[in-house]
Image (tube, rainbow, N blue to C red):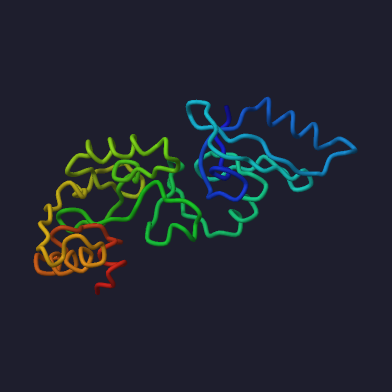
Length: 221
């Protein structure tokens, strides 16, 4: 099967990674050449187990074998949108790198995410070592297992991934918060207490991530 990027759940679903079968791709391209063809159509997007994961759209007059930086074949309704997005720079190993703060503007996360290590060193962490993004309900057990087994720290690399510059603490290193009764039971109140707690403890002690969500989402300086 061919790694591909289509729509999860159906034609109007969110962008999702999966696979398309070469035989099905070649068949629809052949059908779209027919005189009675509408000029576009869908094939199934599969997950790694061969189960339904969404749909992959093809519009014949704009179809090309176009791939994103992760080597995924892009659907016709995706590549035009993808081409208009900014692109992360790429190192000598072919891996993208940059800030993860505005990843939605790029349509994907960089492979190497800019971060600050435990000793204040700037560098990059490999995103797949600190985050797992469940794109379907079937992926949720894998996501849970990933975070349960995450180490307390990972390596911080230079841009070319040739040298280890420092270590980067994952969320497993952060302290477990015990919420006072007046803040417990409400997501909004719990978020308020998180800001209070991390501010009092010194946010840089527990959050070495250059684009830490506690800095961005909570509006900290």
